[in-house]
Length: 177
Image (tube, rainbow, N blue to C red; front, side, top):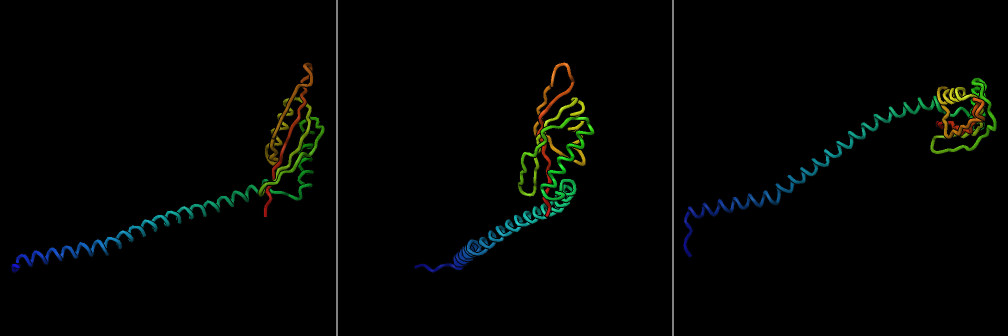
């Protein structure tokens, strides 16, 4: 075998050094760097989730305040029987004020779902169309907030301006804890 010159030895050592550096980078530095990038991405993702959670918490306060306002308006004032009695009283009072005849006033059903109770009332009304419309308008606004679920109106005769109708009303109440 031929003796290796010092120049060839230097080139060989440089190649071994470069190969060692390359292997060191590939085996140690690159995995650490990729793990660092992965952790940074996970941290960024978690920070975004935290920001979303903060927004939700902020909106929860606003929603809670709104809910309390609705409880003031729609909150149950007593047991169901008292609410139905109040509902009937509201209908009769407004019917008298608008000169509308009310017949067959009867409670239909009570529906409870989550924190909401809805009371349904069916009745037959008789009167002038303008009075009936005014009656509907008053019931749907403050302080009653009664909903018209179903309305069927028909003319009693062609010579009269009176109208008869069957109406299904509902009143909503929030159950507050």
